[in-house]
Amino acid sequence: MMIMIDECSDKTLKTIKEIGEELIKDSINYKYPFRWSWLHDLIENYVRKPGKSLIHLEDLPDKVCVSFSEEGKKKIEKRKKVL
Image (cartoon, rainbow, N blue to C red):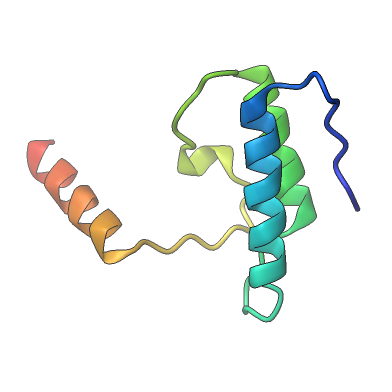
């Protein structure tokens, strides 16, 4: 399944599509591979809320398994201390 984005589309949408397609290819043998439907949902969410720089966990479908890098874990811990 290919997601078509016009020539005149926003550069950000093209970047999201390229990164998503790469993630789909790279994660094909993972227990929870990234799926076309998730990429489609991300693009739809961006179109509805353009310019939104963060993707909140509630923006992702329930079937998405999220993991964090060590840097990400440190940021979460730092944020928890502020709260």
